[in-house]
Image (tube, rainbow, N blue to C red):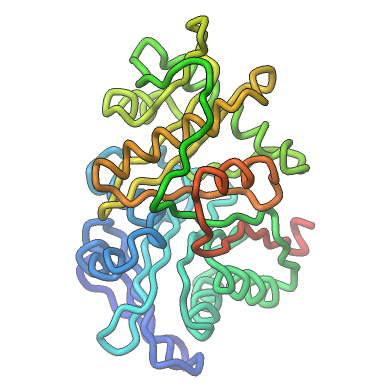
Length: 319
């Protein structure tokens, strides 16, 4: 029997019982409807749900990411009347990866099979392990292809900041006239982060940088710069718009010629403390293949929350 589908209030419901589960997959087209359905679940563990919460809140508030041509939806996974997980597909650029939160294995299998049934090509899966790995493996099996890990990441949180050693210069908020520099460093971060991790290509930023999205962040006081003792700007630490009381730091970038002076550790420590003092819970992602950044954040006081990954599915037609 095929999956049972109905459409009401802007979303598609797929019963997952055929996959050995009593769960329903509710696909929402409207981010506001998704938040209404999943808000309590997101708020229950706001550090873990930071990415979906911030991206969705920006969509609801109209401060959206660039709209691509790929699929766009939010998913609520229910077991009976209880929400047990969420996922989304909002990436504006190919391969339009989905982002999954921890979910029962049966739900991860059901998600992969539901997307396959409706001919929604899935070549990228990001999110919490092992759910992301299960979706990727099942998608590859159904397509006759292979799944592999493109990037391993880890979500960290800090509750007590370890002060950095004295570092020349000082932290300041970025100003609108810093926009060109901020954009240039956001773009440079993409390439340099991958290089530091020993990979070719670019680091997969959660939110591709654009002037239209960076300027509001600067104006909202969410981008900090470090000026050295000669007044030259040498480092950037940014923060994503908070959601459910959680502020996520990133990106953190020091140009290659300015590294090794402690700017990143000093800036992240100071920004983290400022956010904690404002009452936020504070987190960030690290690339597990970048030992330098992992050492920096551990020294500041960040501790692991959950391992995540960016996985790629290669199908025979794209091999």
